[in-house]
Length: 289
Image (cartoon, rainbow, N blue to C red):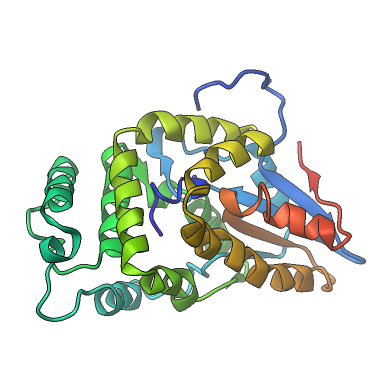
């Protein structure tokens, strides 16, 4: 998923009103005989600032399994890349310039050059794939690394400890909705990404700060504002997936052992967030200190 468009999956400049002992981005939900820890993730982190908030360690130590959006321990990277190649290709006889128009194509070419992507590499890809590629590369250009992200760090711990892992969805479920976006909405997604690229460093620092301090209100403000004028994207990226995941998370509460569930931060907060959905179902998420 796009890292810029999905700033919602990110969150260390200081925000007013926060203190050094603020809570972390992890909530505990008590079942009859167990606890499910629900944590907000940043999928990529700067290598030099990748230490996780202490609440993650507490939740991990008290859990018997690690559950992620995708079970990264079982994802075949070659198969995932092939999925993008097959589903993200433009129809035969078309190219990116003809699909998005010359002015937008020029913007894409400039952005690609700035993140070190050779010219023409994107010419056969659909607009939604181009948005993902540019966003990912911008974060890499800024010093972010998927291997430093929350899930990657926790997965290494789980594999070292022999702890089981699981996923809430498949590649088809994660990316299929982007493929299904109308051409107009794909172009809006691309425009949103291009517009944000220059603002990514400052906005990302704000999100990272709110994330580290577990400031759910600030996260909701930062992560949802870019989607308010784009309900189709928000519906797929957040709302529909939250509703699909909710029964699986609540099913974990029927077990006798504890689980740590890690999802992108945007999925937790705001209207239709998992915390709100859980409360509507009579559960009481308690934020860890």
